[in-house]
Image (cartoon, rainbow, N blue to C red; front, side):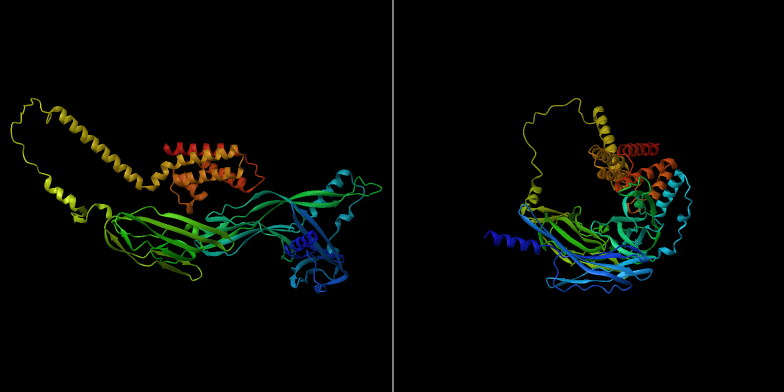
Length: 614
C-alpha cells in the first residue's frame, strides 16, 4: 500500500511540471574558434525524436553528445522531480559575418517542442590592429598601469552597450495612446546600473506598464548581435496637439571586464585573472511625435473619449411613486483613454431632484492600451406626479481606426409618476403646488367671530408701536438683513466660482499632504513619501493657478509663476524639487534625502504664498 502511494505521488510530481526546450550559445565567436551549442530539456524526451538544425555556416566538430540527470526533493509532503537532458555540439564557423543556429525539434510524451533560433556574430579578429603588442618592454610600473587601464577600457567598444527608445508610432491623434519602450542592448556582462533617469513626458499623460515578465532576448542591430532587456515601458496619451518631444533617458551601466593578471604570479598555480568594473553612460535619442487634432464637427455629447467603446444602460422602473428615489445607470466599456471618460449628461425634468453622479470603475493597463469599464449612476427623486418623457442618454467617442466620431444612445424612457400614497389624501393642484383636500377645508376656518361682552380694556400710555425703541430695532433688523443678504450672495457667487474655491483651498490641501508625507518619511517609506510630495506640489500648483490636469506641466507652472511676480530663481526651485522627487521615486540609488526634499517643498510653498498675497 505504501509503495503504491509513493508511485502515485511520484507520477503526479512528474506530470505537474512545464516542459521547456531551450538553446544556449555565445553572442559572438571569433573566426577559427570552436564553441559549444547546448540544447537543454527539463524532461525525458521520446526515443529518436530529436532533430538537429542544419548548422548552415558552421562545421560540426563533435556531437551530438547527450547527458542527463535528475533529482527528487520532498518538502512538507510535496514531492518535486527535476530532470535535465542536454544535447551538446561543438561547432566551428566557416566565415565572418552573422549566422544563425536554426530551430531544433524534440518530442515529449507525443508533444513536439521547438527551440528558438539564435543569431551569432562571427568576428575576424585577425583584421583588427594589434598595436598593443609593439609596446617596448622597458617601461616602468606607472606605464604598465596606464597600459592596463587602457586595455580595460578598450575591452568595451562604444556600441557594446546601447540604450534605445522605441515608439510604437510617431503620428497619433490627441488622446490616442502610443507605447514607448526603453530597451538596453548589451554585448558585455553588466553587473549593475547607476544614475537612472527617465524623461518627464511633458505634454503626455504617462502610465507605466508592468515589465516584470519581460525576459532577455537576443536581437541583431546594425549588423551586431545583442542581448536586449526592456528597462522601462510606458503608455503615453498626448494631451495637446502639435509636435511633442520625448526627451532622452540616461543610464550608467556598470560592465564587468576580465583581464588576465600579470602580477603576483604563483610559480605553481600560475596567475589569476583581474576583474574590473567599468561604468559606461548611455542615453537614448529624442523621439518626435506628431499629434494631430481631432476632426472638426464633433457632436455636443463628445467629451474627449478616444478609442473603441460600448455602452449599456440600466433604466429605472417605468412607474414610480412621487417623492421616491430611483437610479439611472450607464456602463461604458472598451479600450482607449478610459481614465478621461466623463459621465454623459442626463437631462431630467425640472420637477425631478437630481443628485451627484456616483462613479465606479475597473481599469487594466497593458501594452495594447487601457481596457475596462466606468459605471455611472444618476440618483434622482421625482417630486411631482405625471407622465414624463426622458431623452436618450448619448455618449460620443472618436474612433482612430474609422477616423470618425461614433455616438452611442440608450433607449428612450417614459416615466409615470404616481401620487404619493403618504400625502394623507388625494392631491389637488392649487397655484402650482400639490395641496390635499384637508388643507383646502382649513381655508374656511381662518376667520373667527368677534368676542362680545365686557372686554375690560385698559389704556396703555406708552405704546411700543412707533416708539423710539421700535424704530431702532426696525433699523437694526434692516441693516442686519442687508448685511446677511450681501454675504449670502457673495458666498453663492464664490461657490459657483470653482477656480476661486480651488485657489483658496490650495494651501490647506497642500499642508494636509505635507503632513501625510512627513508620516511616510518617519516610517522610512521612500516610495509613498516621494509620491505624496509630488501630489502636494503638483496639486498646489493646479489648484492655486486653476491649471487643468491635462495642462499641468513644468513650462505652464513657470509661466503662471512669472505672471504673478515670482522670480525666475523661485520658479527654477519648483522644477528642481519635482525633478528630485521623480528621480528618487524611480531610482533606487538616488542621492536625495527625504528630510531635505521635505524642507525644500514646505519652504517653497510658503514663499509662493507670501509672494502672491503681496
